[in-house]
Amino acid sequence: EVQLVESGGALVQPGGSLRLSCAASGLTFSTYWMSWVRQAPGKGLEWVANMNQDGSKKYYVDSVKGRFTISRDNTKNSLYLQMNSLRAEDTAVYYCARDYYSVFDLWGRGTLVTVSS
Amino acid sequence: EIVLTQSPGTLSLSPGERATLSCRASQSISSSSLAWYQQKSGQAPRLLIYGASSRATGIPDRFSGSGSGTDFTLTISRLEPEDFAVYYCQQYGSSPRTFGQGTKVEIK
Image (cartoon, rainbow over all chains, first blue to last red; front, side):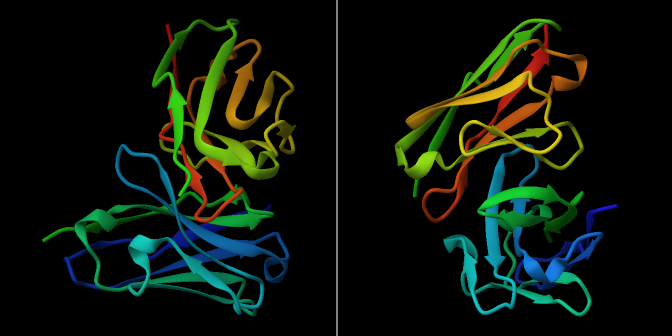
């Protein structure tokens, strides 16, 4: 079965850090661009970051530039999102998604990040 | 960035009826680079349509997309009980990729 499974979400204080992981199975992970997309509680979707197959190209939405870092380990079929200097407005469910010709054709179930004191 | 405005915010319909959802862009979207997603409560989004009118793998043919430039439409020809959900449009013609705010299709 083709699937993406996120983990690492938690309650964290403002200014804190968190690392999210996404484990891929059933697909040739190393051949795809991958993205993180988030959804604040009761709100719409927002693309956060993506990277190409070998990690040489990385792109971010302006609101997370300089604070979040996307990375991957193709030997472990895993995608990561290091989140630093977290703010209340970063509170959201974070989805890992396969980025296929710029559309998101496969999604994980998401992991919840709550930034609150 | 391109802002996508979806209308209506909520659509109240009965099973078997036709649903027409609109997505309007703040500027022209190149190469009809527009996708539609369905999200059911508590679930991840699912890709329905890409390239404005191409159905994704496994999507029933009651779902169809149309439009170009700044105006796009998702049509569900006959609503099935499992179609009641929130629908989002997304443009990928320019960076950053952006989503609309969603249209909720609810049971009347």
